[in-house]
Image (cartoon, rainbow, N blue to C red; front, side, top):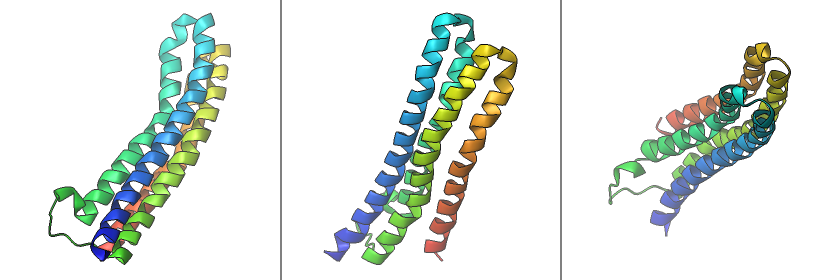
Length: 160
């Protein structure tokens, strides 16, 4: 049973990391997309700027995908070695190492979408505010990046 427990925890950690990042991006992009659709209906020429603002919360999904790949790679599961045995305690370490990316991606993706939606309103009033709107939305992403850094440090520590 121990043979499957550690590997199962590695897979669960990779899956949770990815799914939380994907969910944060999807919700955040949904908020921004709703706001952008309203603006583009009135000002079609702003489509490119609206698309940029909607895309900003999508990075958390990318971080989740990268996090899942790192977990599978660091654990040795990605190579597909059939003789690989991962202890339950080690599997739990990989599971826990993915949580900072996943949780930070979920929360920051949602809130980045909310800020991006407000930025879309700012751009709709005056196109000269595009840089300000992007900067405000990008500030929220800082926390997702910190989540990636913490997870990476934890993954490096498991091998030590």
